[in-house]
Image 1: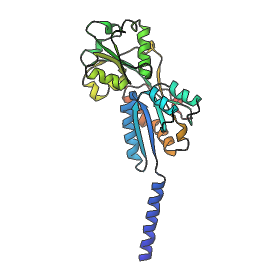
Image 2: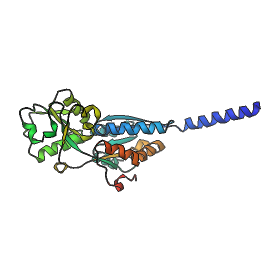
Image 3: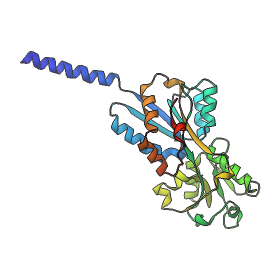
Amino acid sequence: MTKIFHTIVIGIIFAFGASISTAENITIVAASSIKFAMADIVSKFNAEHRHDEVKAIYGSSGKFSAQIQNGAPFDIYFSADVSFPQTLKKEGLTSADPVIYAIGRLVIWSSTTDATKLTLQKLSESAIRKVAIANPKFAPYGMQAKEAMKSTGMWDKLQGKLVFGENVEHTAQMVSTGAADAGIIALSLALNPALSKQGGYSLIDDSLHEPLAQAFVITKRAKNSALARRFAAYVQTPESRKIIESYGFVLPQKHHFLAR
């Protein structure tokens, strides 16, 4: 009996040790626009895969791209613009092709003014003293906010009012705290309960700017990471796509989602 017990214990220890040895952890970086949807997806994934861990960092797409170019230890990069992952691929810094996971939408949002009645043209009115957008040098939502304003002839008119956030989430914080009277932010942030309680929004016509085709890519560092591949596949499941859609993103056609 003792011998059998020892055999069972050794078997359990071996099995436990094997499961620990195959456990992985990865770090993903994601654009601020996808923060709340991605946080839900990461939470569900980690709950379903107890031996592995996905850690997420959120911020500016452009800055994350630059950090990867400089050797930052990131395994999957979720950008707010497909061009950044495409550039990394051309430079040999990815282990796969970029995959478009969502199409973002721009909105005008305010916590002090009825933004449902605001347009880009109305941002020039005297009641609106400061208008916040994400820095166009680094943030795709800032780039397309600038393009939408140029399309309507408002870019030059609003120069004296514009203030710039580090990323689209920081831009929303500037409006929320009163540093700006209105801002152009991601619909996904405006739909977040914390912001939706503070104010309304109005959609910006997406014909005024290039599509905000958001894409992810597995980095060269994660070439042999099974966890990176599993998480990339998980983001493309119907359950994850429903989460993404619930935050106001438009889902791309199915063939765009197929990992290559």
